[in-house]
Image (tube, rainbow, N blue to C red; front, side, top):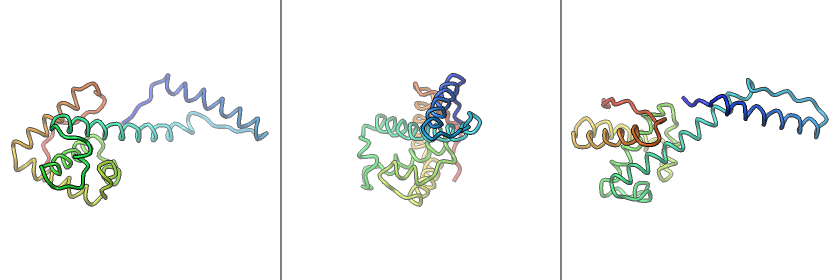
Length: 162
């Protein structure tokens, strides 16, 4: 869940009041907007920004830890173990944002569709259950994401069941 601190909400409220007065002067109307009215929209947009930032962070960490580029990770190629890394990325993202659209994840990884991401999630769950080395690698990536500078990204250490 994304939270906006009191100062951030106060800033938004001030900007909203300024906008409201300018709009009223231009249109010659009275416009009544309040923080209560716009808070859900602001929260939703902030959540979208956090999702996007986390997707980028996952890509960076996975690439750095495996000495590959983001281009290789998102490539349509199926060689060199990169699909497994991509599938781990999908799973790491879904661990933190379980309601994120699969199509959004797919778009961030080379324009893949939701079915491809779903297949990747299922394949990753099976891989992590069947291969201790991959499971350890996945846990290591979780630790980096949990203990890095971006502490707001929390991933519970739960082994996936397929």
